Length: 135
Image (cartoon, rainbow, N blue to C red; front, side, top):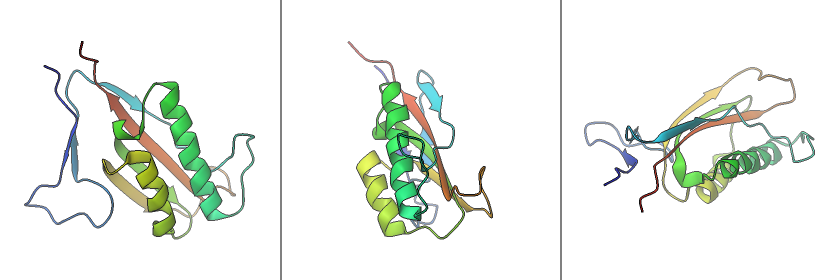
C-alpha cells in the first residue's frame, strides 16, 4: 500500500495564522519537485506594474510548471513567498485556494527590499511531491 502525503497542525503548536499547515509529511517513495521562484510575468514575458496582476501571473506560471510534470496544486507540500510590498491577502488567498483547493501545505512568507529585478514585486517558489501510482 502506498502511503499518502499528510498535512497536520499539532495540538501542541499555536494554530496557523494563515492558510498553511505547520507540518507536511512526504513518504519516502515520493518524487520531490522543487520549482524556481515564479514571478509575475505573463505568457509573453511582460511584467505588469500592478502587484495583484503579478500575483495572478505568478500563480498561472506555477500551474504551468506543475502541469508540465503532471502535477497539480494538491501535490504542493511547501511554498515560499517573497514580496517587496505588503501582500493583499484577500486577493492572494483567492488565487491560493484556486490552486491548492484547501490542501494547505507548509508556508513561509518574507518581505524583501528587492527581488532579482527591480520591477519584480512577488516571487513564489513551490515544492511538490508525487507518489507512485497504484495499480
